[in-house]
Image (cartoon, rainbow, N blue to C red; front, side, top):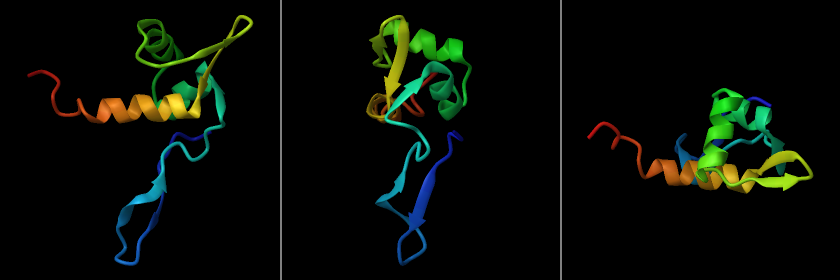
Length: 87
C-alpha cells in the first residue's frame, strides 16, 4: 500500500473533480499500520485519531480496523481546516 494519489487527467490535462481516487491502493477494511502508511504518519498517530473520535474505526474482536470510507471522510473533514491552523 502506497498512500499516494492516483488521478487520470481530463482532456485539458488537469485532474477533474471526480477524475482522481484518494488512497487508490487502500482496501475496503484496513489495519492501523496500513492506514498509517496511507496517511504518511506513524501507527500511534492513527491510534490517537481513533481514540479521540476523529477517525472512525470498527473492532473485530480485539482487532481495530478502519474502513476506506472512514479514511476518506476523515480527509474530507480535514480539508475544511487546511490553512486555518495557527490562527
